[in-house]
Image 1 (cartoon, rainbow, N blue to C red):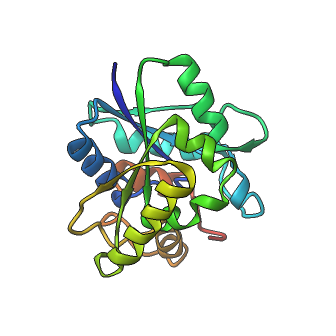
Image 2 (image 1 turned 60 degrees about the vertical axis):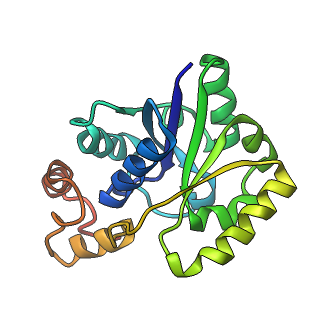
Amino acid sequence: MAKIGLMGGTFNPVHNAHLALANAAYAYCGLDQVWFMPNGIPYLKKDLSIPDPAVRSDMVKLAIKDVPYFSFCDAEVRRRGNTYTAETLKELKSLHPEDEFYFLMGADSAFYFPHWYQPGQIAKLCTLGIVNRNPLDKERLLEQIRLLETEFCARIVLIPFSELPDVSSSRIRELVHQNQPITDFVPVPVAEYIQKNRLYTESF
């Protein structure tokens, strides 16, 4: 049986905080692997202009290629229609029934979790690994964790992390649009890919 962390997200683009979160979860939870799993058409962001899944997948593959315990998972990008975490987890558990999955997320996602599609089903299929990026908000997050444990019988691990890189995908897109360097915020191959393909130059 393997313990597998799932890093889902739009990855528009993938950045250093994503990688730091995955490394923290790998170490603290004793994971065997972390699978990076870009969304296909995320239903919560379906009205936004998001690059093709193949483009975002290329960036993820470049970002993780040198880390042996990071892998790329195409479970969501190859599925047609809206992307739902509950459906993805059902598929992965059917393919890997002996493995234990940890769905990794930031604290912001933990607060929105009750509004996800079939949150109870998600809680049955995996452990939620939550990283708090704002230590000043820890008590509020602990209260939310107790709520999720009570309402959904969720298994939750709060992953300690002293400081995540202060970066977001939206900030990176803004910097590219302003023709500013981004190599402090994303792996060099990702920055080169964005420049070569002129991503985020027209809009962000």
